[in-house]
Image (tube, rainbow, N blue to C red):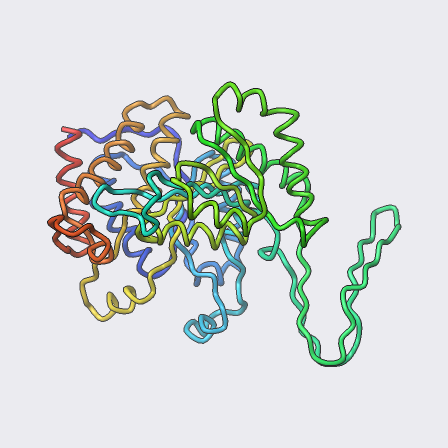
Length: 405
């Protein structure tokens, strides 16, 4: 079979632990036999980020902006436990996802991969819920401080003009912890525009929720900007498309989401989106069945899986054991990147390959061949067979070969 040609490379961001192993297996089994793969490779594995003082992450993000399409493997964001596991680390490096999102100023759209044989935990959900997560600022760009003695913390803004604004945060009589976070109006506005444009492209209602009754200025600014963008730019298009924009407080939104039938886009601030997208993924089936695409205002897209590096399976793999690790979200990251690259470069064969890769993966699952994490979720009476990761990829490859022949 003649391989499908590419003209412009993808930015390939490699990762850590078990997902790094799966990354190589996916390329070897599902990509290289079919595509004359061209990538600009960046190793975002933790030890290489440490060796380059995280410059490799910055370089990868700028490469994504230059080439327009990136695909990323899951990576480790080290905490104190990881510092003990990796004694070579010279610093508790920040989240590479956070760094990339800040540079690209994008919005992460996360949606579950659904199967007829797996019913959502929330039985009234009849269609996927897409979480639109703001990908800049808040606690992901915050600074933290721990103090031991009595005193007062203040928040100071010093303008370029020299003018200062000072707020008293709190007076304390003993030890305390402090955190200061920020966001930029330009980034919030880009977030709002991305959400409205994505809702129009998907022809789905858009919900947005914050807690502006408590964070009256901070969350209130998000609410105001969304309202301005909707009223000034998008209302007529939404009405013409027959879809709605809806704002409510986040606690009310959670209750409404649980009672809903699904089939809408839920826009959330950075931390809220991080948490709720995992909840949505688990309720629809599995974190390994959650797609994620970072969409930048300039059209740059970075495709990745929403889950982590599957550490537990990695340690079993290192002992020589076979694992049944679910690669679906990572496969869909590659397929999404191929579709986008093909659309930009006007390569219909590459677009079709991305579509065929997704179809073959779904057909394999629907035939009952799946990794062990999905078996307990399958509806009673549906015939299933648990396979290793390698066997699952081989089964997809067989269907893909037949589809492309």
